[in-house]
Structure formats: C-alpha cells, structure tokens
Length: 153
Image 1 (tube, rainbow, N blue to C red):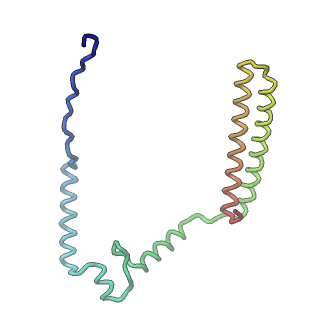
Image 2 (tube, rainbow, N blue to C red):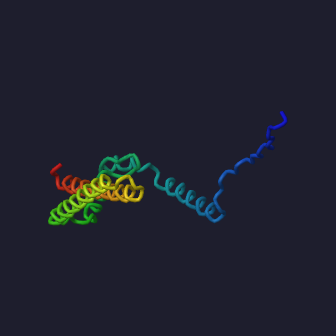
C-alpha cells in the first residue's frame, strides 16, 4: 500500500528489578540478623510464651489483648474532646448558608427568566444559580453532619 504509514516498532527494554541502595541493604541484613538472633535466644514464639505465662491471649501479630486495650485507651485519651456547645453554632452557620444558597438560587432563576436570551445575561444568571446551589448543598451537608454527630440522625 502506497499511502500507508510505516512506523518502526518501539524497542521495549526489559524493566530492571528494584534493588535498594547499598546502605539500606546493609541495614536490612543487620536487622534480619538481629531478629534471627533474638528469636533463637527467646526459644519460643510470643504466642506460646503468652499461653505458658497465662497472661492472656494474643492477636495474630503477637500482641496481647491487654496491650491492645491499653493502646486503645491511650488513643482515646489523645483524641480532642468535643465541645458540646459548638453544635448550636454549626447549625446556625448551616442555616445561614442554606438561606444564602436559596436566595442566590432564586435570584439566579429570576435572572435567567429576565435575561431575554442574551448570552452574557444567561451565563451570569447560570453562575449565580450554580453558586446558590453550591451554598445550599454545603449548608445541608454541614447541618446533616452536625446532627449526625450529635446523635439526632
């Protein structure tokens, strides 16, 4: 065929397997050796040791239930405390945002009706309408989230 383009095939080179840098190889091999030595010194896996000591059951990773409960208690203590009075402010802000969204949406709809088919008027009215709908959605989302956190929904 005369009009056909002939592209030369792309030469695919074989991808190399990832190898860590030398300093990471040394650190990794040193850590592996330490782990093997520690396992040999301990003699029994952590699960068998926990059962022999009678301290409790272990999870799949060798952590006892008691330790997991302690860690969860520490995490709960680190969580920021809820400010019980802020939910009212959140609802008030959500209400204001919803009202602004409704006003912008109504104003945008009225502007579309009065634009008279002009492109600039129509685009401006659509932007106003979409902005109002965005505000409306944001206000509803904030209010819903606040009420859900409060346990109402």
